[in-house]
Length: 312
Image 1: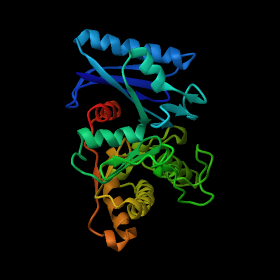
Image 2: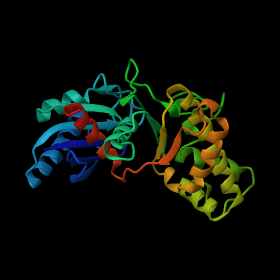
Image 3: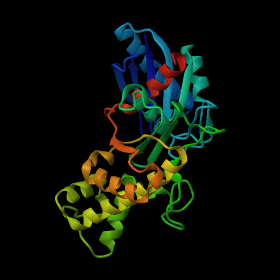
Image 4: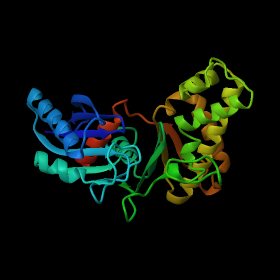
């Protein structure tokens, strides 16, 4: 028995067949773009799933989907700014009809949190927050072993907590959101601002082609300006996480994604600032750790959603 895990990104979609134990039997990546309609996209994904099932003689039990702006309750992607199609896309309905199997959807960060809960470091942990640090900043919040969706399916958007009034313009339409400072995009933004002010970062010669990895590498090599950027990124992240703890009281916070892969260079100052800003009631009670999920976590997370729904 296997489920299909589908991770839908703005550019590419990763598809996998995953066992109950989290073993990946089959995987394939297809472009998200280039399909005229959502129905065309679903047809190509279904063909990939059917090909994988036939090749490995696998029986499909359900479909789990992780996607930006996905609503667990409605089963739809709703007004995703970076998707090829606009408006409300009823993906659960489309996949269920095409494969005659139950389908479930949630946003990509929630899927990663479920993956951490089912297959990763959060096994057996009932209260935790997973923060995805990639191009943007996402989060999945688990309270008493249940993912928090809120009344409308959109709870847990830590990336869109405003930490700087009238700060950087966010893609959501507001200014000063956490993800404009604490994400790969935010780190690059900080680096460009610093270079425009007349300072330099070791190894960076073109302001147009900076990556967050460039900044992390320079910081690891001791570049003071890069270290200043990482320190300020960690300060804002620690500040936001300390505030989040006051709301849900998790025992653990897990960091996942490309920015988190910088390791101790970000983790150590984040823990320092987190402890500084944390309400003393919670002092020493909350661990900040790196995720144990592998690089295909998004597919595993989508699959974990399906497994949790059909065999809770």
